[in-house]
Length: 292
Image 1 (cartoon, rainbow, N blue to C red):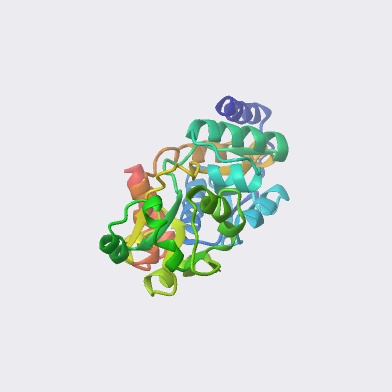
Image 2: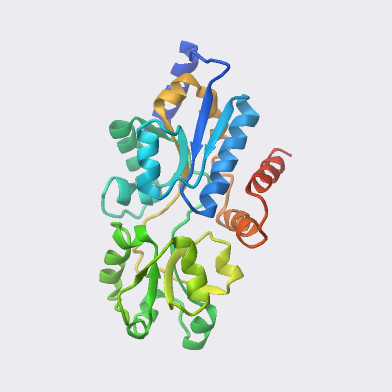
């Protein structure tokens, strides 16, 4: 139903002529971590390439709730969100496991409640990654979160601000697995948790599965063997008013659907976080390769 609705909006807007103005500008936003800026830059450049419209970039706005407020208030027109995040953090619904059901649910709810359209998923699933040091995983023979539970009473944990509060975050994870730590988990900026883990300040964190720093810092992703986390497919969400004016934007972004695998997203993040490549250059090179 969501795909049909998406197509209907585009076709209807084309038939109505869209009231396009040469000076119109599309505003693309992002959350405040590397993957989001990479994806936002890909979205911005794709729009510029395919439509010729001016794009304003408003990156590093903040977390999920800041970006949601920005798009629902009309401050931005587009940003990339994750289905599981929308389901639990914004819609405050319990986690679901089937990716198609989650996508349909959030697409329908966002349309009805916020006047927002979900584009098709970009192809990868950026789930929460419960991480420990690779050396600890090897020494203790750990592969799953359940196996780590016996050791966590002597460990310290560090989590991002959202993870400590969200429906799919720490409270539910701790209850599902029976996690207990030596002290109350530290709350810190998500970007700092990786260095804190690698440097021995904490012993377990919740990162993102597609982050390039996991490999670079020799961290180990514990398997979520109880399937606690829902799917987190990344997809652009767009204001319906913007699509009505500029259906060509939705058409341009539809070309990106299914084009980025987990490994490819991890590679792009690595280029920025580890090799310190410029985000705009990384995005441009990726789009060039896709079009060749």
